[in-house]
Amino acid sequence: RRLGIDEHRFRKVRYARGRTGKVVRIEPWSIVFTDLDTGKILDIVDGRRGAAVKKWLKSRPRYWRQRVQYVAIDMSAEFRKAVRENLPKAKISVDHFHVIQRANLMITQVRRRRSHEVLQRRGRAADPAYKYRKLLTCNLENLSIRQVERLKLILESDPELGVIYGIKEHVRELLKTRDIHDFQSGWAVLEESVKATKMVEAKSLFRTLTAWRRELLVFIRTRLTNARSEAANLTAKNLKRIGRGYRNHDHYRVRILLYTAGLRPC
Image (cartoon, one colour):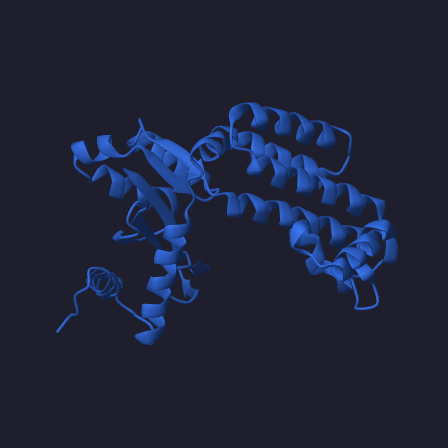
């Protein structure tokens, strides 16, 4: 009824010479399909992004595909396209962790840009914005009094950092909403804040959120996340470490499926 889709790297990145003689980068990825109601791993597919997801979903029986009501994914446009094509009745929820991650990346980009514009160099330990940079990505309510004072020092040192931090907090408040009315109000506040600034990082984030607005609304109504998919990914990675790595993806897949089913191979 609720499907989670996530990916992780199966092997280390390799470089090989292609048919044209050009060296190409090979990233072996695995996609994990998880039942979000039980946390059970349904399958592990060799491949990456939309093509592998589309192929796996297309191979499921028709009754199975019609039964899926919700799908939780990260902010992957290829995943979304594959789900929409093969599960047209399912509603897609975007994981809020990846939205916050994108907002934190926006802050990091602005901090680095401002360091080069003002100081003509990258940040150093003597700079408050660099020394306490992790505070810019922390939840304000979780900070101690001392950390709040340090955060104020950073924001007062650069007005642009103060503005971009406020936009990040608007995104967090938007994700805390529980109904459509509060979401629309929070969205209007965020949009007004972005329009009031000329920073390209803020406008880029808002364009991304606009492209994922429908999926954000599903998350607000259902609070469906990809947490169990992330947990399944961690299980797969732990087995990979125990096995000292796998060269054959079929062996890797069977080992994980047997382990999660409570069985042990002979």
